[in-house]
Image: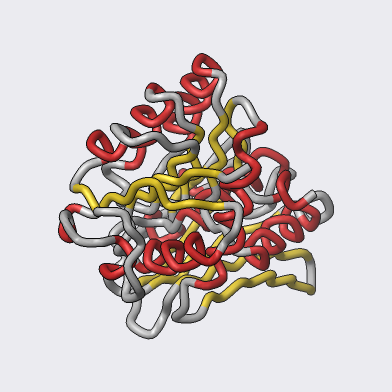
Length: 268
């Protein structure tokens, strides 16, 4: 069966790569495309390729007027929550690649997906190797109590931390042991330099670096007496690492109800 996709953020960094990949797939079809700055243009041509036969519209509301099965969202942090809820209300399954959502947002999305009997797959990073970073870090957290997360991105990335780091911090916080480091509330000087406390019941300190030459990077640093373990993922300048995972989610989300966080469940 062909999966009909509405793509939000069709002219973005990942969106352009997805337009081409969907066109090349036998079991996928681009049914709608959203990009405010390119409204009225052919989606394929706006993405730098040949004609796709789909005209870009300015809003998701317009795009939902055409039949589709799955909405893929690679938009912006300030609008993605509304997009997901609107897509669910319109009877679509959703794949969320946009970062910036927190635990409360995901709880609301899960409730809406359950009520609509629809599926949502959301990941801070749809790269397979970034998914392995998280899997290995969660395994290490079973044995090493002290862990912190460092998030690297370009100087112009608008949200902090990255979706990758935020998701990793939340998941580590849910399974980690009590740390031996001095609690932030007991520190003097400038406690904010210890980073942001993410997740619970035992939060993880997450630190964000924003500098030119970085694209996206994330590392989990574990410390034990006289030894240290660092598990790190770095992405290059191409969006290709995220395409395969996103399209895997688009193919699988239709068989799910409620929210699925991360690519792990789909890989297994």
